[in-house]
Image (cartoon, rainbow, N blue to C red):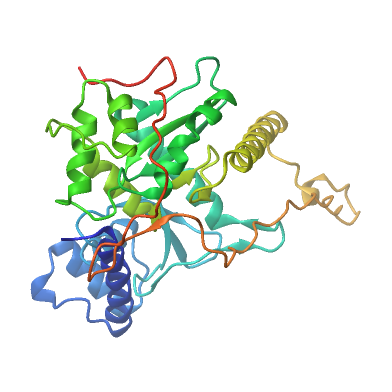
Length: 352
């Protein structure tokens, strides 16, 4: 059985191998490389600056098959490219030799630049999937906020979260589920996820499955693998993996009142970010103090801008989530009551 933790391990191992191989200039022999990859390898050995296609070719030759190299741009640090792999942010030197992962902070503005890009990538990834490829439990009234949740029908903490869905709906929060069977493709949990998706009433089938009822086994065209690969690319470490509408990860299971507070705070943050973007567009490009100075006068110093609070470092506290199975044996699901949750919401997704 191939668990999702093995996929993550494969990515990390590949990146380690990539770093060692690139540093040694031995990623592959010239005879084993395609023309684009061969040119990139040769240029990298000479210390020349590579173009984006050449760096992408080097990465594609080293990353696992289901990881795709996406947007690539110059980072704020000279000589470093920012590379999107799925919804994860990596950095590569312009000669294609070194690859590394970590957070890049701007100490002048106190911004976590990597965190911002990662949040944007997550938001875009969920939009790309589309609500039609998720199972949504929506409020009966107006939807004020949205949570995206990677779930496993056999996960105890996922069942606890599902019991809180009516309370979240009452607060105007829609819950949109994506499947992440922790045991991996071919497992019983994977089969259950497909069966839930193929049910006539997906929301009811998911609720019953989370209450411990074995779903009627069915197969059909389904997004389970797409969900699973997306979660793996985002670095999901367990379930439930809950994401706020700002793209920030809420962690694992959070009691409903606390989760509602987090959602409301994220909503305010999103509104403030949008207001800031509009204000910036309206104001246009800021004036250059050098150009604005009168002839013969020293340039005026630009007024200092208020520094936003820096994103905190991650807490050492472990989130409440069911862990990924170890390579030796699947992890047991956390115990949780199996009470049924009424399939609330007026716009649930159903199969044709």
